[in-house]
Image (cartoon, rainbow, N blue to C red; front, side, top):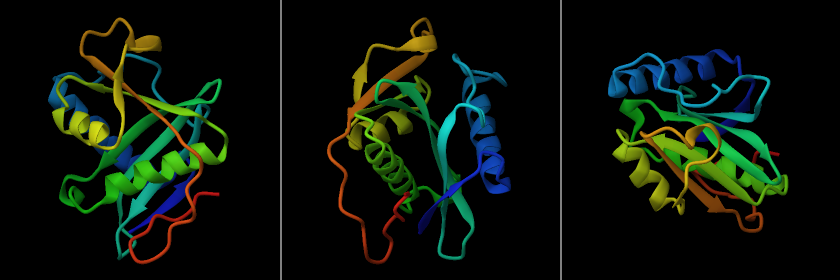
Amino acid sequence: MRIDIVNWDDPDATALRAGQRAEIAERYGTPDSEPGTAPSAEDIAVFTVARDGSGAAVGCGGLRDLGGGVGEVKRMYVLPAARGTGAAPLVLAALEDWARGRGWTHLRLETGDRQPDAVRFYTRSGYTPIPCFGAYAGSPSSLCFEKALGAPLPAASGAGAAARLD
């Protein structure tokens, strides 16, 4: 598994985000459940794609700069067939490493009350519940989380390690 930084409009990134939005629409019964401003090429600081051993895109995630050393995790997604392969933890670790490398001190995220799998993943990954922030503050289905980032980790090595995102 490897993690690549890609442009927002990369075809694999676009396809993965479309899959994420379709799954969310199905869970919430609406084509647009985004309480805040949808991410775009203009406001995403970095976007990553996870690729399996054959190079196929299986997951993605990005970061939006909220200012003051705080970023927001956006569009985390792993194809259903690739869940449980370690793609999601690698994407999140790569995003956290990228943020640390830029001096960001915290990452925040919003997920929804119909995504218990996401809540479990983020809490296992060290994210703790916080009051909803920004556009999510008035959204009754939003659940928000935050993680304080420590010092940068040494470069990973060995099979299955995420690529450094410098």
